[in-house]
Each structure stands twice: as C-alpha cells, then as structure tokens.
Length: 168
Image 1: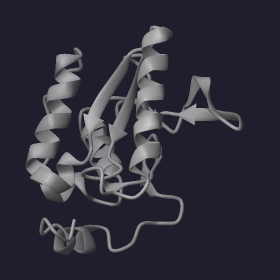
Image 2: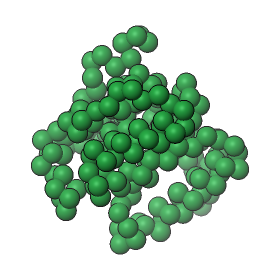
Image 3: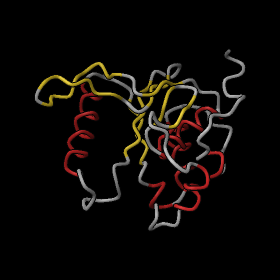
C-alpha cells in the first residue's frame, strides 16, 4: 500500500483495523481487499456471510476446516479474495499457493461455485481498477451490479446504515 501511494487514504479511512476485523452486515472482514468487496455487495443489496466453512477440510497435520472469504447466500456461490501479496517475494507465498490450489481444486471436484477476486489488484493497480474487477467478476457470473462505489465508500470502515434496509 505504501509503495503505491494508498497509505494516506487507508490511514484516513481506516486508521487501524479493529481486532475482530472490519464490521460489515455479513460479518467481519479481515483485510482491506475483503472490505471493498463487502461494501460493493452491501451497496448492491446482495446478501452474504463471511468466513463460512467449506464442506471440506484442509489437510494440515490434523483436520482443519477451510473457510471462504464470502458466501453469497442467494447466489449459492463461494467467493475468495486472493490477496496475500503481489508476487513470490511475499512472505508465506508458497503456503498461499498451496491453499489457493487446494481450495480451487476441491471446489471443482465437489462442483461448488467459486468466484475468484484478485485482491492484490487493490495495491497493484489502485482502488478504481480493483472495484471494476470485482464488479466484472460478479457480473460475469450472473450477479447484477448496478451500483458502483468510489474509493471513499469502498474503504469505509463502518457499514452503511441503509444496507439491506429492504430485507430487515
């Protein structure tokens, strides 16, 4: 973020990540790329939950439940924000690749709908490009995305008061 000039915006909008993560209507988000996805889903009135268990476990010594970043409840799709870092110089890159390949292959094997968002675009290409990428992935999978957000709304650490007002 610092390298790409996003630190000032991040510090202004979300000075420190709350211990539990950023609150959203579907649960807490752990990262800024996830937060931008949540804000776009909220703005388009698309119900979701965060950190839902996949119906498979990750073989890590003992059985460990794999979790998705988002589950779109009405669409029936798991959504992953792949964003550990920019390249293979990032710490934990190898573990990230193993987890990504495992989740992708298990979803294919079990015929689960998986949508992939490239979260590193937020830091590599900027907020506007990242938001357009999120909308394009969702629209390509048949999810209507009529509402677009600007960088300020997408990185707002507090959920909007009017999200899902028609569903409550």
